[in-house]
Length: 117
Image (cartoon, rainbow, N blue to C red; front, side, top):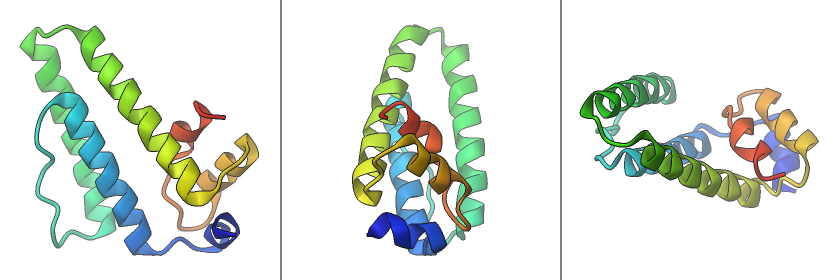
């Protein structure tokens, strides 16, 4: 039922909640704190996420730490995120995942779901 509703519209508060979860999991993978996000619009949060991941990736590459460990943490946390999305929205197939990616006002997260289906 929830998936059918989300096909039509995904409220901002849900998109923000899922993006906050993505920030947390990404920061955990990079072993850092997520940036301050209070009072930001959803669009500003998306921009901040892009900048945050870019800065963390560059910092990690320059640190000399093993990339394999980071890759494993990122994969593990992406998998967790995808499982949570799948469960939250009752997504049962690749078709559902693709549709969620292109549905009006939906957060683009089909990449996280494809690994699970």
